[in-house]
Image 1 (cartoon, rainbow, N blue to C red):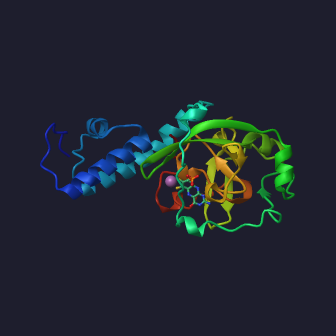
Image 2 (image 1 turned 90 degrees about the horizontal axis):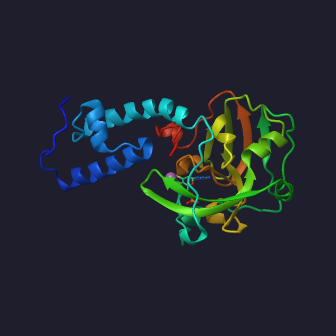
Image 3 (image 1 turned 120 degrees about the vertical axis):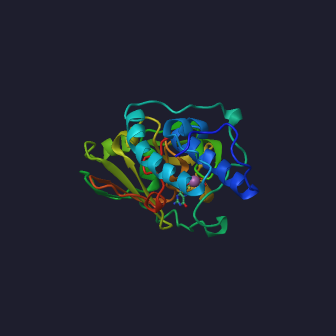
Length: 253
Ligand SMILES: Nc1nc2c(c(=O)[nH]1)N[C@H]1C(S)=C(S)[C@@H](COP(=O)(O)O)O[C@H]1N2
Ligand SMILES: [Mo]
């Protein structure tokens, strides 16, 4: 490992693009710049193999550091209505025309695992619970972010309502489109973590995860599952669609 150089070798355009991409990933994952990581690791991060090694190491390190950072009730920044991004970006592991088609009259949220009350929830019943609205920024690991207004039930309120064992370690989510994800319990209990029913004062549109999604502004976009059909509480890490493909599980922002 070489010490960081102020003037590295001339990079090919493809390498240059890769480097910009790596900087972005680093900043999102760890809040550290490439320069800072070079200093910390003593690695010259301009060689492809080395970069991936360091990113994987950082990712493991991050799970610990971020668990500490977000173990408390630190609040994510909130924004004003006139800062909301319009149009708001759509993202999923498939194109927009494949957004699941759901019959809202038949919709039920299933509840399972370490909870006292396991009955299903209709949308009307969910709307009877106390609601909260926050204007926050959603940050996607692919390198974009956008500000939106989400309203819904604080997940903490819902968990208390169903008699969840909040000393358990994880809350998992299954979606109508094969997607799945999970949160550590402290994040699930964070005051800004919502089971969102509304987006910009109207019921969630299909693209943005109708009829129910998780909105967690202290996590990256992929920890915000849309089209939720089942919620469960568990002591085993349920993983997630992207998490299981190597993205940092904790993924705080
Ligand atoms: N069910 C489901 N939820 C999902 C995804 C998905 O593919 N399916 N993609 C995730 C990713 S990677 C991001 S960035 C956000 C995007 O949310 P948006 O479409 O409201 O911008 O949804 C997350 N939740
Ligand atoms: Mo994302």
